[in-house]
Length: 220
Image (cartoon, rainbow, N blue to C red; front, side, top):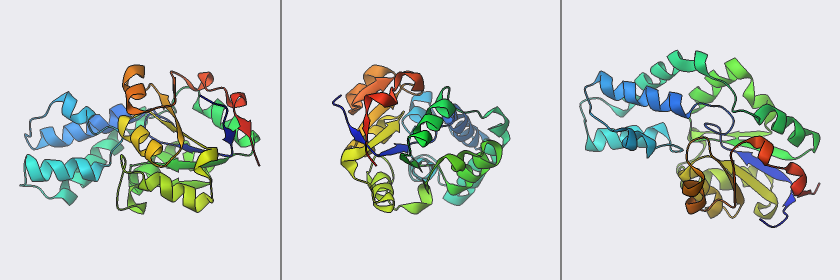
C-alpha cells in the first residue's frame, strides 16, 4: 500500500474496537431459538458487519412473521445485555488508539450497531472517550455495505477521503469503506485474510501491532 498522508482514522466497533461479534451472533441466535426459528451459523455469519434491523427484517419477511420487528430487536438487545460481562477490547486496540491520539489524528467510531448497544458498551468500557465522533445505526437510512455511514463521518469531520484510513473486520464494512473512497485495513478478527483481501482491503493485519502508524505520513 502506498504511503498515505494520514489525517483521519475511522474505526468500525464490533470486531475492531471491542471483541463482540461472537456475542452479537449468540444473542441473535438465542432470539431465533426462543421462537423455534431454525437457522445455520452461515446465515448468522452473513450478517457480520450489518445492522440488527436488517437481520431481523429478513427474519420477519422470510422466516417467521409471527413476532414484530420491534419485539425481535428488543429480545436481541436483552440477550446481548446479558452477555456484556464477557466484553473486552480487541487485543492491541488501546495501545494503538493512544498512539493515534498522541499524533493528533481525527478519529470516529462508525458502527452498524444501535445507539443502545454503544451506550451499554460505553458504560462498561468508556469507549466513546477515544473518538471525536460517533456514528450509529440510527444516524443513517442506509447501512454497510452502503457507504453512507462512512460518508457521513467524513462530512461531519470535514475529512478528505484521500487522507483517511478505515479499519474494518467484515466484508460489508470493507465494501462500504472502499465505496466511500478510503483506504481500508482489514483486521482478521472475524474473517480470514483471503476473505478480507477479496472484499477489497488494501492491507491485512492480524493484530493492531502490525499496523505501523509510522508507515503513514501524517498531516495536520
